[in-house]
View 1: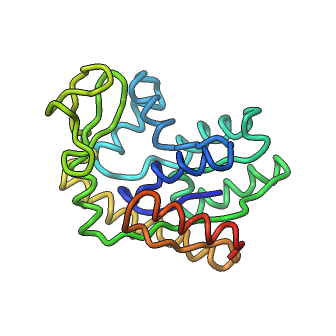
View 2: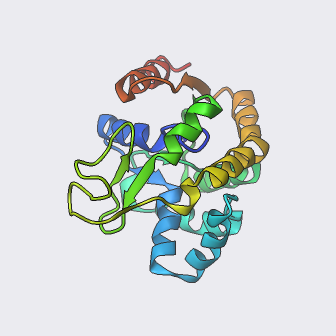
Length: 214
């Protein structure tokens, strides 16, 4: 399964719920790249330049990490992709990788959320520097402002959650990622889901569409 949608649509949250439901790994291209950035690998240094500007990371950087991940043993029964592919060339490359593995995507779930709601969601996000736990100053605040509930680490606002960067990221999504939806729609794999509501409500909508097969 592929979850696709603009930044802040809740792809990561829904992927984790679906991971528990189907007992298959949740694979986030963003997490893969952020890990490389944190470790300051050559790929991470290159990726950070684009991420800080709210631009998409080049395909060759993303594809290397994703191909290796999909070939691990825990993906043999299936997987849930989150945030990849984001462009038509990436979608084509993913199809080729999966064909070599003897599998394919069964469902492409598009989570749709109005832009105003996306900006509100993203600009309020805070992340723990130590353990990576995420909070939201409105929807899921920590017990003590600026302090992680789990490890007492400092909470910070990621560079790509600044409002001007958010707008740039949404513009990039509209321009470069939205055409992927058209490609999957033509293949009959696209399931469009209303992403406004509680986590459980959105998850229930996804399950209804996926289990119905349409």
